[in-house]
Amino acid sequence: MECDVCGSHNVHRRMIEEHYLEECGLCGNLQGDDEAVALVEELRAGRARGLDDPIIPLVGALEQSGQFHVVQATASEEEPPQVLFTVPRGDAAPVERLLRTIEMTNRETKLLWLIELSLQHGLVYILRPRFWKRPRDVARDEIKPALLDLAVIARRLRRDLSLSWWRE
Image (tube, rainbow, N blue to C red; front, side):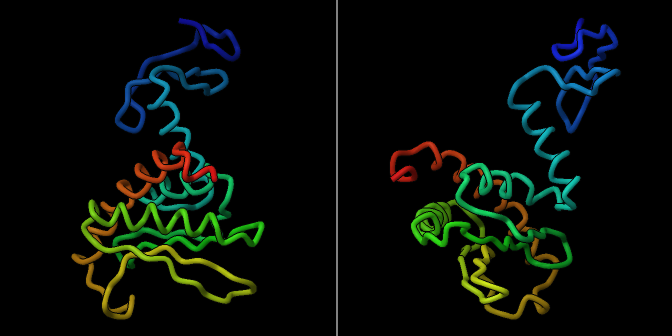
């Protein structure tokens, strides 16, 4: 087998992030199933930014839209997940579309999710699960469903981004 990028024959098939892919030993290029390659590259890029694994797909989906700038994102077993983002052009329309996606996705998620607005050196939106208590009072077993919800939200957002009402 030959690397698609550098032409090296030092390409080996191995398990990477639960997917069998070919990786070039010379340039590091990944080959194989396009979706699996995209997922692995997204995970690697997110980790390089210091993001927690469960939130990487959601951050990727938000940034894929080209309408949101993620300022901070956390998703650990110790504290509830949240994504802080801005809208670079100051346009509220993308936030309204995101709210529409969140409202529809809340039918599938284990928890209800919401978007809050905060003033932190400018307007910052916070996407987070709704807990009826302060974040520091949320128990670890209450956080686990929220971590599972992240993949559902990311999947629905990626789907919705291709729909006509998202491009209005």
